[in-house]
Amino acid sequence: MPRGARIRPEGPEKPAGSERPAGRTVVQPAGPFGAGEWPEVPLKANERVPVLITAGVWLVFLVVPLVAMVTGDAPLGAKVLGCAGLAAFIAVYMGHFIWPWPWRTLPHWVNTAAVTAVLLLCVLATIPAGGLNSFNFLPFTLAIWIFPHRLRVGLPVSVTLSMAWVGVALNVDAGGSRFWLVIPTVMALVIMLALRLAMEREERSRILGEELALSRQRERVGRDVHDVLGHSLTVITLKTELARRLVDADPEQAKAELDEVLELSRQSLAEVRTTVGGLHAPDLGAQLASARTALQAAGIAFRLPDPASVAGFRPDRRELFAWCLREAVTNVIRHSAATHCSVTITADRLTVADDGTGLGASASPGNGLSGMRHRVADAGGTLSLGRTHPGSDRPGTTLEVHL
Image (cartoon, rainbow, N blue to C red; front, side):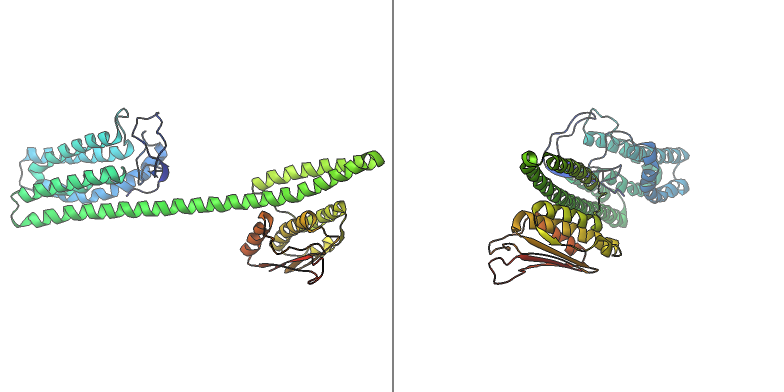
């Protein structure tokens, strides 16, 4: 039965090539089968085989009227007419799956109504030889309404068709067999509607899952870009201010600082590009060197581990500690007013401590700290903040990441 769908804005049905106005959200099929409207053009060659297999497997139920027509007592002409009607029914039914919108100047439901009329004519041709076995054609006429159309169209039409079939079953001279003509009709409708609703629910769950994954990806990219730019722009700002102070007193040193600013801006641009592309993973050793440069430019004394001492850490921890170190040092430079910063790193712990003004009673975490917490939590670790020197005028801040 039909599978797969997409969400699209709902609008009035129009022929191919025309636009649909935006409006409420409904389900649109991603391919030939779906819980919404089918495409307006014939299926591509590579889509036809799976569609024919999915739709054609149900044709096995037409073996019953075929056997009844061939083995029955009807005249030969009625049998030939019945077999021809059955063959035409199969051809039209399967053809509708390949080309669901034959007259693109007309609305979809009009196309399906025309196909339904042709199918009913084929059924009428099987009645002289097949008799009551022609009721086996009912589910197929319901299927082309329930699955290709939105429920607001397919539901009332399929219910109307079922009621018409039930009315016919109750008025034919079938003796005690009327019950067995009515019950299959109702069961076919209920089963198909249940399948249709289950498919739509499954599809909407899939779409929600994709939207959630996309939201998480956007959050990750935004967090990465913030961490990259926050640190790089802080260092660029500090070095630019230093070059401005040196431009008169020491032009050569000012020029050297500006050269470093230019190199940093190029590196930042490359990092942003690779981060957006999902390719950037900072190296802890390189980040230690970058932290040294940034703290020097800010005039903050520091104690940092040797980059060689972290070379043997697991790659995932090196990357996580690199992100956290970048953001922590950036916060020290921007917000702490510290004169000294100390960094210690072990295989399962990163600590960054300063002697600044501290977080303060009203301090609230910004995007950088929130992003760091998310990274640490995703890695199964904990992040804690505390005072370096409790009780003093400059309590400082200690950030610790523990895995």
